[in-house]
Length: 337
Image (cartoon, rainbow, N blue to C red; front, side, top):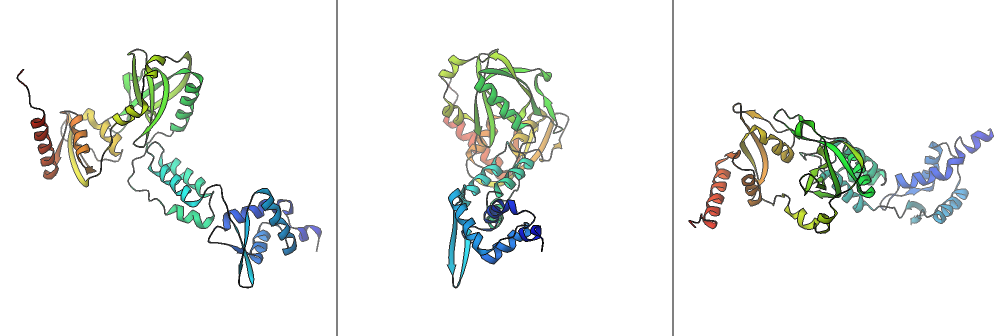
């Protein structure tokens, strides 16, 4: 037997391989016997024996990798005790990634795979079952991550930014606003609401604080001009502004059909996703059916959109809206004065 065969092809990587085996193969419910550890090291091209492994375990413990030895009958089983993230913490992170609308499906899957790598292979399977991806409306803009970085750079540097803003049209295509003209504003804060990232910024032309959906911003660049609007932002309350944005309460899920003017399609795509079916009614109007949670907040949202959209089916929801309208009319009667 040659020295290379005796020592193994990757003997210098022994401690790294050993640490990886404990990280991927063991957890609170899963441990390995000494022969199993020796076999797995062998698959990595590393030869080992019991005597040297006992010393290796001690070195790993000194390094901060806590290896526990559990006596089971006449044998001993070894496992990793502590990790940077516990399984419930990883589940929370997976939930956050999946429920976030500003993260695309592709990036969601990539991030979850990376989160799974922080758990053992056994716990990773439990993470995969933690959240079922079904019908959640996700952004279609893959540049969202670069957008967020550039906005943070501008905020930290006290600079302005410029970008092109878009909305969805009747053909479910991205249509630029203001005929493609550049927006130039002073960014002050990033806010998360209803699964979307919003930029809160100062518009010098209108002397107003406005918010912009970050996933609808394109070609963002940092402008070497000092940020403006400091006086307004001294009086700005982020919590109050956050609460003013739309959110639905709980209620009964129902398939509801809307009839709306064509220019309303972007609002419905934003709320219910790009996969909604658009049925042309005439040159100026369309119909679509979506599954919604019918509640007072939902009815209030429809009312807030004005006369260019109305519920046409089912009758039960139409009647709910009629009763709500009658209630509001009685609550706010028109005064003769």
